[in-house]
Image 1 (cartoon, rainbow, N blue to C red):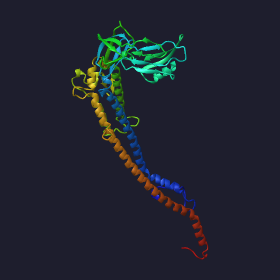
Image 2: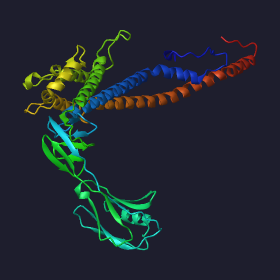
Image 3: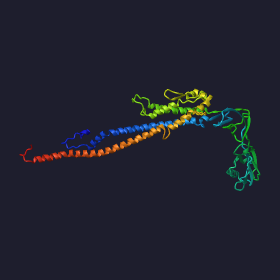
Length: 453
């Protein structure tokens, strides 16, 4: 028992006090649990490392999202804006098919709808009959007036229920109530005609529909609506007011504002990722060591690859061949800084070169295209660099957890053995005074002449 280093709490053979079996067994098991505690520490560190690796994976996914915005050939770098010099007269939108350029517009008149109104009706009902409604050159639709709808509100509801492209309502003024009919659309196809009226209502045309008239770069255009498409490819013109004597300048250009925002988002995500990785290899005077993953070859490989991406270059492109040439500079610590003045100049005066660098159309691989592909490979669920490391980490955790479980099983068996062993010792120590008294009693009953030699 001496080898266990167990303290029997001062018990002696003559005290009869016994021992604290639970405390003794616990002390022995604590001494024998040192290897298990080491395994648990390793398991905890593996869990921390896995969380760190997963965090890097999340950062790479975020970086991938920002670079995809720059590599998408239908995305922000192909977006166009349309700017009007008179937004009180015309506004416009442009899609990625719009060609950059400047145009002159003159709005002669807006497209308008058509309307009719009946004479005032002073009686609750009016005579039944029918009339025909026609929009533009479409087929006229008969409207029947009978004793179920020969009130102004009843007829209005009946017409609206048929969804004819006409809105009917009751309008009341000082002279009485009228039935008003207004075409829902504008332009000549929406010009309303009422014919063949045999009802008790007398209709008057209050407005005739007209197409919008405008000039685009000197060419006269007619449009049935005030939203004009197809005149300038990829551009929608929204006519708000007529301007017969007021030429309007419309500029179609790349969307430099959102392009700059996309660059900022990429730089922010890149810096967050590379700075976090760099931190693992930075010596911390407080702990006297670098990060827990500083010995990881996978993480060092990731750092090297990211730094390599930032120096990627293409050829030609009028000299706009690197991030730095666009105004995105590489710092000594591997992070990037956007030179706003230089980037804005590139966007304003060399947007084609800017777009070509990220999305090369010449058979080369643009920066955004290459980085997107590389990040997809890095974050591949099965073959990605960090996911392989995470998978190995999980395997190591499972192995160590299995060893801990086996060790705890052995300690449980050992605890049972020790409890039995020291319970016997405890019983012996507690019984010793009685045994000693019995022996002394037996010795006392021997004849006095008997001596023990």
